[in-house]
Image (cartoon, rainbow, N blue to C red):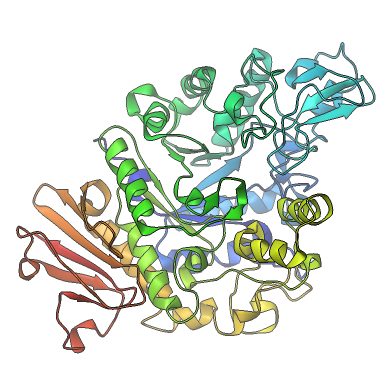
Length: 559
C-alpha cells in the first residue's frame, strides 16, 4: 500500500462560526482560529478541515456559497485567511477547505443570470423543468423537508434543489460549468491549500430520470435513487482529478451518503484516480428508524461491529477509510454512542480509542477532544439549524405530533448539538466571545472546558494526545491489517491490527458493567505489553487482566 501523508495524519474539523470569536460580535472568525492554533499544535493534529468560510447569505450556515473566491464578512477578510494558511504551514499543519460544488447559493452570479431568462447563457448551469405554478415537475422531497422543486415567477419554470430552496443544484452535465468549477479549484490550490472536503459529492450527477415520480411513501422521495452514485459521477471526478487535482500533492475526501464498500473502492482506489477517501454514513444511521433521521431507534454494538468490520475488510488494500463518529451534521459522539453522565470521561476515551486504532484517517470534531456533549435547550427559539427548525414546524403543525416528542427527538439528533460554541474555559460564554454568542453555550461549560482538560493529566484531551502520538510512532496503527476477534452478542469489541512484526490488540468494553475478556487460545495476554488504557490507575487496582472495567479501553502491543 502506497504511503501518503494524509493516511498518516490526524484531521481536526473546525466549524468556524462556533470555534473562537476574536472581535466580540458573537460569531467565530478566522482571527479567532489563528489565536487557537497553538492549542491544536499541542493536541498533535496535523491537518485542519475548515468548514465553509466563503461569501454566503448563510441560509445553511455557509454551505450555500455566493462567491467561491471571497470570504464571508462575518469571518474576516482574504488577508485574514492568508495569514491563517501561513501560520498553519509554519506550525507544520495542512489546511483542507470545505468545498460545495453540488449546488450554490441562489445569490451566486451564475444563478442570478440563469434565472434571468430562458435564453441566458447560464440557464443550463442549473436544472430547470417545466411545470405549472400549482404542480411541481414531480413529487421529490428536499433533504430538509418540502418539495425539491421551487417555482420561479420570472421564467415560469422550476429549479431543482436537493437541500434548501436557496441552494439550487448545479448541472454537471454542462461541460462549460465543469470547466469553471475546475478553474476555481485550481485557483484555491495555487493559493497553497492542501486539499478539499467535497460536500455531497456523490449527488453531482443527475440521471436522465429527473421527471420520474417516486412512490408516495418512499423514504427516497428526496431523489437519492436518481442522484446518488450515478455512473457519470465517476467520469466527473476522474476528469477533475486528471485536469487539476493530480497536479498537486493534496488530500480529497468526499461526502458520500448511501454508499457501500464496493462503491467506496470505486471512489478511493488509487488506480482509479478520483478521491483520497470518502465519508460513508453507515455508523451514522445505526439509530435511524424506517421513517428517517427523526425516527430514533436503539443502536446495537453488534451492528456497529458488523459495519466497521465490513468497511475495514472491504477497503483493506483496495481503498482508504475515513474514521469519525461525529461532525458538524451529527450529534456529539459521547452522548450518542457513550455515556455522557456517569462515565463521560471513560466512554469518551473509549470512543476515541476505537476511531484512532482502525485503519483509515481519524477525524476529530472540535470539542470532541474535551468530551463536549449534546445540549438540551428548552425552547425551539434557542435553535438555529434550518433542518431542526423545519422538522419542528413540520412535526407539530403538519403532522400533529406532541411538541414534547418533537423536542425530545431534537435533543437527541439536532445538528445544533455539534454547533454550540466551543467551551474554552469557565468564564462567561465559555471564553468563546466577549459579546452575545450567535447560539447559546451548553450550560455544562463550567465543568467541561479546554482549560480544565489541558491541566488534568488524566483528561480526555491528554488521552487524545497519547493516541495521536502513538499513531505517529507505530506504523501498525496506520497501515496494519484489521481482524475482528468475534464476540457475538457481547458488549466487548476486540480486534487486532497487524503489520510485519508488529501487532496491536485492542479491547473495548461498551458496557456500564465489568465484563470478562475471553480471547482465542492463540492470543496470550502475557505476551503483550499494555501501552495505553483509559483507566490511568489500571495497574494499581490489582484486578485480573481478564476483567474489563466499565467503558474500559485497552491497547496492547506485541513486537
